[in-house]
Length: 213
Image 1 (tube, helix red, strand yellow):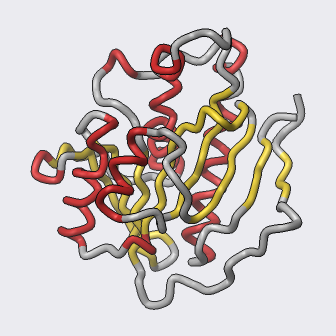
Image 2: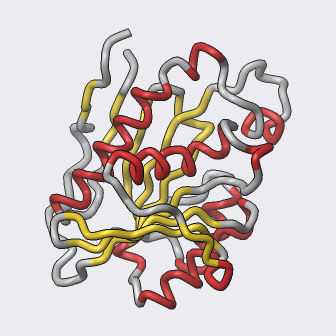
Image 3: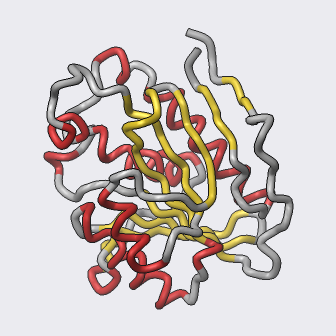
């Protein structure tokens, strides 16, 4: 398969206003804590921020029990980038995000959430600001605390196969062997998305990226 292609939807316009003087970006990777969830579809948010941290030489993750998350941070391009992985379970992710944003005085406009999306096919990543939870419990929890106007990096894990399989069982299962062979391309593209966001200091565009064709 070929490497990813970047495809900007013709009907969407990029928001060119910048992050202004707010020189902190919070990147939230969604997942469930515990080794039994490692490598599952629902934990792709964790895997993406782990890869971003490793690629950009972030310090070791710290277990911040008071903030209900694992956290690491460093400065990139004069921007303080804070990465977190909530240690709550998925449906309580908003509690961790609320604790971190309150402690660091971070506004919702400075937040990007990386998460799995069943309605998007594997091989595709979609970016946007705002929108509903689409049934994702982690997003539901964050929306409960902040409303909908935060950035999303939506990593496709669909379609559900077999179709009759329970949705919870599907998202908590591991990727197929074929999909696992392409995880490097997937995390490379999420790294590119997050790096562009940091270095451009612009709000995420509404955009679709295919890392497999």
